[in-house]
Image 1: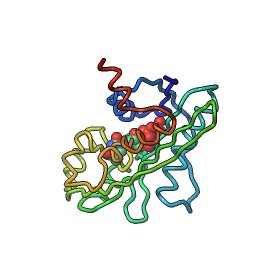
Image 2 (image 1 turned 180 degrees about the vertical axis):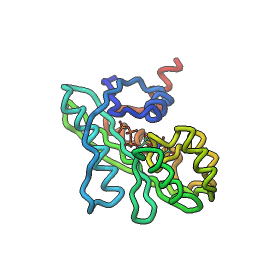
Image 3 (image 1 turned 60 degrees about the vertical axis):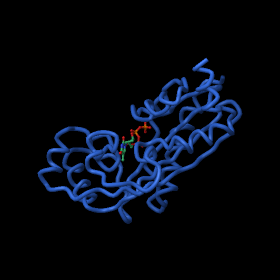
Length: 199
Ligand SMILES: Cc1cn([C@H]2C[C@H](O)[C@@H](COP(=O)(O)OP(=O)(O)OP(=O)(O)O)O2)c(=O)[nH]c1=O
């Protein structure tokens, strides 16, 4: 099988991809995460996922490169990763007791042929009301710091989420069903690979 490359420093994305039995290399891009203020949320995550994948694909002569990006959107407010505890506190104060949408973009690029695909998914998240003391305690766990919107649904943040509408993996940062279907057009078939591993 052709070399698969995950262009991401996110341990969550690494775990999700390993979880379906794919073997891959990790190469972290230093792609600029600034975007035009006029872009819609889906355009933002698609642009950034593509930028991350192409930064790595440009360094390689072959390989299928995957990039991803996740943002949290509360009405017209776009929340990325907090700079510090103060910003994490502020984001959680805005999100508590309300519904927001998590957008995750995925880009796949074949470094050899230049074939490319970009997609995204959006999931609505209902967060329960949180007291200031709860927000403080959660911020102090350190978990919010490298997460878009300052929470991790897969971690202690699971206790803050009442329910979601849509794909769970989109919230964690890598929509797996979307990615698997995109990979089939690059002739990478996740279920077939999993079957080969079992044999
Ligand atoms: C909302 C949410 C986000 N996140 C994470 C996923 C992403 O790692 C991060 C969003 O930041 P990103 O900029 O998408 O990704 P990253 O900087 O971690 O990694 P890279 O750019 O190298 O791919 O937030 C969770 O882990 N759980 C959650 O519930």
